Image (cartoon, rainbow, N blue to C red; front, side, top):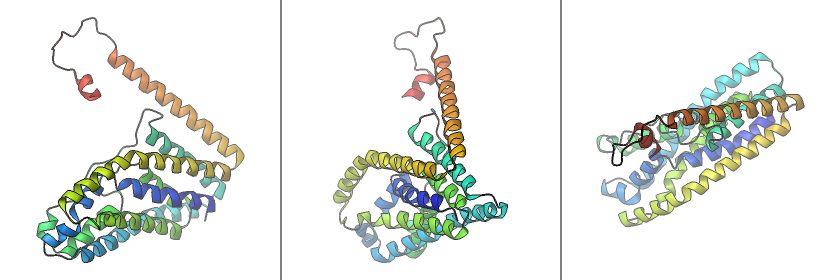
Amino acid sequence: MTFTVALAAAPVTVAAAVRSTWSPCGLSMLSTITPFGERAKGHRYAVTVTWFVLGAVVGGLSLGAVAALGAAGLRATGAPSGAWTAVALAVTLVTLASETGAAGMRLPVHHRQVNERWLDAYRPWVYGAGFGWQIGCGLATYITTAAVYLTVALGALTGSPAAAVALGGLFGLVRGVAVMLTAGVQTPGALLEFHRRFAAAGPAVARAVTAVLVLAALALLVGSPGPAALAVVGGTAVVTGALRLASRSRRTQVGAPTGSATPAGAAPTEQSLAAG
C-alpha cells in the first residue's frame, strides 16, 4: 500500500462527504427524514435513520469496491509506489483547479435526486435504506464537489483494495450520519431556521474543502520522488495556464462588439442570459 496516498485520501474522503451534504439531494434528506415528519407518517424516526445510515455505509462500500478494482489493477502492474504518489498528486491538483475554478473549468457532474415518491409507496426500511445507499455511494445523486471523484481515484492509487474499500465505507458513514443533523428539529418552523443556518455555513465548508485539498496536495508533493513531483507541478501549471488563457480568449471572442449596438429595451442575448 502507498502510505502517503492513504494518508492524504482519508481527510479528502471526509471532506468530500461533508461537502456533499450541501447538495440539493443532501438538503432534501435533511428536510424529509425528520422526527416530526416520520411521526406524521406513523413511523419511528430512529428506525428510519438506522436504515438510512446502514444503507449509506453499504453504498459507500460499493463505491469503495469500484476503487478496489482499480487498486488491484495498479498493484498487478508492479509499478513503484512513488509513481502512483506522483499520479495522485496530479489528480489532486486537477481537482483543486476544478474546485477553485483556477483554469476556468469544472469537472463534469450530473444532477439527480432520489425519488421522493418512495416515501408514500414503501415502508420506512425500504426508503431509508434505499435513499441511504444512493446517498452513500456518492455517484448516484447530485455531485457537489469534484472531491468525490478524487476519493475514488486516491482509493485506487493506494494500491490496496482493502484501503480503497475502507475509504468508501468512511465516505458512506459520514454521508449517512449527516441525516441526524435534524434529529433535534421538532417543528416545521425549527426546520426552516435550521436550513437558514445550514445554508449560511455552506461557503465556509466549501473553503474548508479547498484547504483540505491543498494540504493533501502538499503531503503528496512531499511524498513524491523529486523529479516526478517537479514534472507534475510544472505540467499542471502549464496546462492550467493554457486552459485559463483559452477560456479568456473564448469569452473575449463571444463578447467582442459586432458593429451594431443593442437598442435599449431589446431582448437579452443568450450571452447575457448565461451571465445572469
